[in-house]
Structures are given as structure tokens and as C-alpha cells.
Picture 1: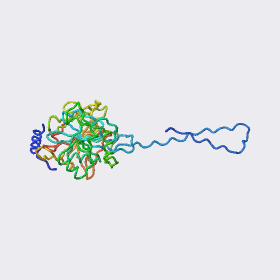
Picture 2 (picture 1 turned 45 degrees about the vertical axis):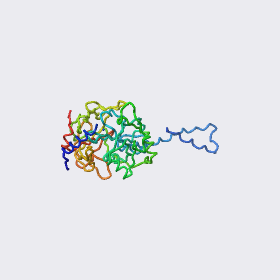
Picture 3 (picture 1 turned 30 degrees about the vertical axis):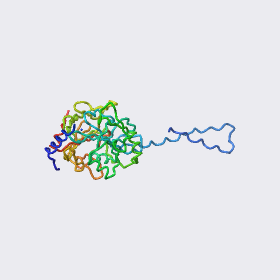
Length: 361
């Protein structure tokens, strides 16, 4: 795998950093009464009604993104929302309701979150919403999602316009489906909701069903085999203010997310941001311009680590044409545990391993 020069990446980031100051059972019918006279003057005995057998339970619908039961047999089209992750935008709203959550560098060492929503309806507040990049479009579209954003890089806008992408842009024609929260300063105060986004997608002609690629899931009581102990781990992207920790809780069988030493909680509900599966993956990053904008290769594949049930499995991430990112070991896709999955995409420079530190116990 080609390794990009860390000095070029660091230089681009430094330049950017300087530029950023921006029913029950029914009884059977009673038996028919014969018209022939009775053999005895005694009243005939009535047959005891036999209850009809209960209908077999219908199969439970399961989300292909989380492996969890869902109430709807036909889920709506996913929404891929670009979430602001600057310190001033934390804590965010609605992250605990996402089926999948990605974190990846934008520019200047800052990271962007991409939340994929499908199986949980009625999310009252999502955001703050932020701008788009080409590789962020790619991530959302791989799940058949409508891209939700506020602005974007010139390269991203070129893709959206040239390829007639199905997106909802707050500073474009979808502005009516967002609002500003006066308790925060712009640009860290733009929000939306699942209901508003569904209404907007329908209005814009994006509400139809689409084919959504899903994952393989294992029984939640299965014990992982072949992994190494990993009760905690730390992921550092580039800047100290974007250091993420995950700590395993055996009671909930999930990893809780921490950012810069503080547990990551939902701004409104106070619920912890957590995941049953976390995939940390290395990708080639390239600085494109003086603003520090990046290209991130999400096709080549590379080293990856899968954290589940307090253990880590080392393998690779792969992505076939027209497919989603998957974790494989020895060429075979690893099954996920039912629940939320987080993907953290770090640079391959100076090395993939330099961005991840594991605490066994």
C-alpha cells in the first residue's frame, strides 16, 4: 500500500490551521344444526366450541445496519447527515440515535462526523449540521443515503451539481428544513430533525425506497474468539483536541465514547454515545490545497482493528465496487454484534499503528 508523506500532510494541516480562525384467537363457528327430528325428547347436548389455532407469529424485521429488531417491515431511505465536531459544536444532538457513525478528518486537523440514520424514527434534534467533502458524499451514498449538509468545498459542490446528486443543502433549496439554535453561535448552531428531513426528502423527490447494503451479525450471546483483550483504547487523529477514547462496559456490552477526557454525551438527553462495534481503519490521505483540504482513499483497503466485547481483532478493511466498507480477517468478513457501529478513519502516516493505543485491562 502506498504511504503518503507525513511531512506533506503536516505541512498542509499547518497551513490550514493558520487559515482557520473559519389480534387474539377466535372461536370456531358452531356446528350446523341438522333438520332431522331428535331421537330423544331431551334437549340435545351442545358441542363445545374448539378455538381456532393462533396464527403463527410473523417474522421479526431486523435492520441491516444494526442487526436489531425494528417496528417497520420496510425501512425508509437512510439519511447521511454531516455533523459538526469542532469543540464549540460539542456536545452534539442526535448522535445516540444514529445506526452508524463515521469520524474522519476534514482539514486543519479537525474531524467531521457522518451520522447514518434509518431505523429510529422521530429523532427531535440532529446537529449541528456542517459542510460536505467529496469523500463524505461517498460514505453516505454507499448506504443509499440522502446527503444532508450545509455548504461544502468547491470540489464537493462540483460533484453534487455535475452528477445531480440527491442532497439536502441548508444554504440551497432545502433551507426550510433546518433551524438555528440561538443558544449557540454560528456556524455551530444549525439543527434539523428526522421528521423535517423526511418531509424535505419527500418534497424534493428523494423519499423513495432504495436498496441498502447491510452487514452480517452474530448472536449477541456468542463469545468472540481469537481476539486480544482491549478494555480501553485511544485514537488520535492529528490534533490533541481530537483525541478519542473508548471504554468497555461489560454490563451494557458496549464501548462508551470519550472526547478529550470527557464522556461524550447527547446534549439534550444526556445519553452516552456508545457502540457495540468500533472499526478503526487506516486510509491514505492527501493534502489538496493551501486550505488543507484532503482527499481520502476509501477504495484501496488497508489495515483495520475491530473492537467488540472488550476484545480487539486485527485485520483489514475492504470495499468492493458498489459496496460498503467491511472488516475482514483472513479474507472472510467478520460478523458484527447487533447494535451501533462506529468507524474511525485515521491517516496511514506516519503509520496506522501510531494513531491507536490499546489498554488490555
